[in-house]
Image (cartoon, rainbow, N blue to C red; front, side, top):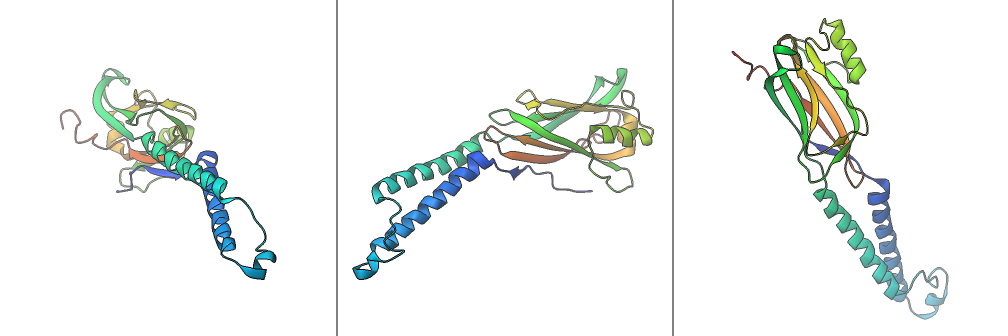
Length: 218
């Protein structure tokens, strides 16, 4: 069952993106007004509203250049600090028992700076069934318990809340045993983070991808 797992921007910072852009638009409108007003001659130039002078051209040009530089500078810096979310997974022994192999998954950020977790949601796709509704960590534990899968035995799902710093060191997502892999086709994690300029980015990742293919003895 396919879904779009590409990272996408889902929100902009009102202060650091919208405010400079609005200022640039307002200054551009003022510039257009002053250009139009300067081309009015004769008696009409002394009538309302053409006699309304908002700003001299010299300071207006300087402010417009500053606003334009702020908008483009912010856009360039936003691309520099944009997170690059992904995941790394492999079979290993440890979390589910001393001799019990598990599918260990880590979320990584390949961006130049850390990002801050805003929200983590999960969606389950049991084998032969349709995807469940998106839910949080507690809701997923309840759903799995209803299917007879036990936290700490069949799987280990780490709780990660808002405010967690996602840096180059990554974030442990969990470990999943053989029974979990047999019964669950996909475990989708929807991760939303905020970058250094306040933009929000989101990516949906299937934590089960590759688990059966790389399973020991498969």
